[in-house]
Length: 130
Image (cartoon, rainbow, N blue to C red):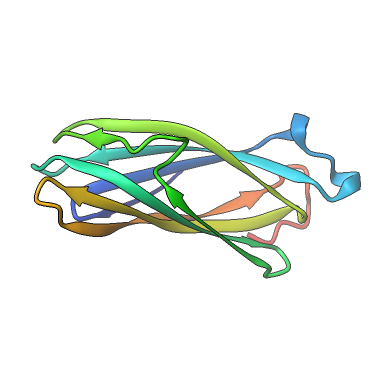
């Protein structure tokens, strides 16, 4: 599990390899990751946008930007958590992900919350890079 706190917003990520959706012989590897966003501050915030950097074992970078997460722009009151699961495919058996969530408070102030870098590893690959 990977965790990082920015401005009292704690992000925890737990990645896991999806063997049943992966086809290594076709260089197709799939991971899911469970994200928990925990508002440990004392003001209400909303997740407005996301930004991901996905880097495979060859160093190929893919960037993903968009509104919210999994079709939502969740609002978190102090002490509330929001959890979601998403996934990503790679053409290599390992890689990394990291990114930011753009948050907004009730005053309209926007700030970035950092998503910890986490590794995507195939548990059946003896040549793990990460």
